[in-house]
Image 1 (tube, rainbow, N blue to C red):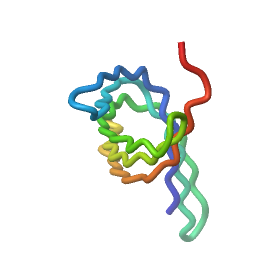
Image 2: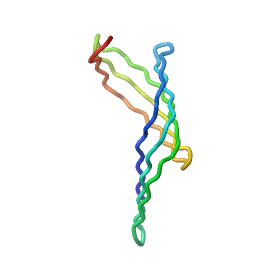
Image 3: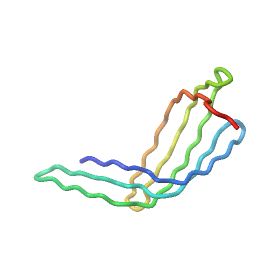
Image 4: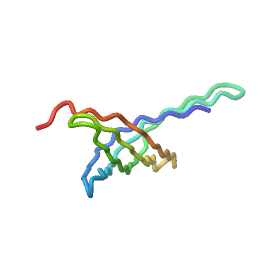
Amino acid sequence: MYLSGVPLIAVWSMNILKVDLFAGAGYYYLNSNLDYHGTVSAHTWSLGWLAAASYTHPLSENLGVAGEIKWMNAVENQDVVMTIQVQLVWKLLEW
């Protein structure tokens, strides 16, 4: 069994006490393949949402290290994933 999903989500964000909070809603394009006594493939769109929070620790004026936790949910299929990431953040442009 293999399942992949591609999110197409409109995301809103805000900064509260140096923590960035994210929330969004949209669609997930889900692709599943089952290989057992034959092969079955299915593709579908599912409504879904995400919630996330991140904190960036500055290393210099343009560079930082961030930690992020993200919860993504394709509601119709009840497919949920939670990720924890460490990111190197580089501020390329600011206006």
